[in-house]
Length: 119
Image 1 (cartoon, rainbow, N blue to C red):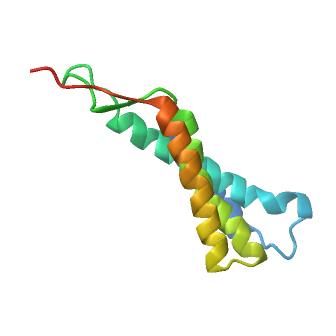
Image 2 (image 1 turned 120 degrees about the horizontal axis):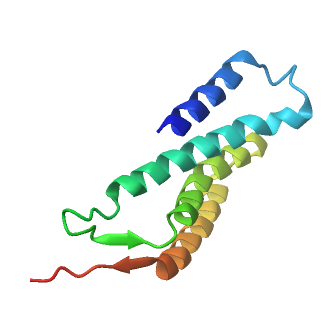
């Protein structure tokens, strides 16, 4: 949680204190990286919160690779932001969504195991 707050405050502070007009070209990618890191850590915390709980008998869905799943989910909005800076049409959004959904299905098939409740 502390990492999440630090990354969020640092990214927000960087975006509020700089202007893209005066920023060197190398640092134009920094807000996108900061937003990706923030979303990645946020989604990872949510996945951990919803994950297995040994005292209550475990979660219904267990992820074997939560970091990979968080990276795919966090990458989609950042991909849309990067594409928006060029030109973003509805077809670009649909293509990006299709790519992310295919990646999600591929990863979920290989990294999710379902726990059956025993009665």
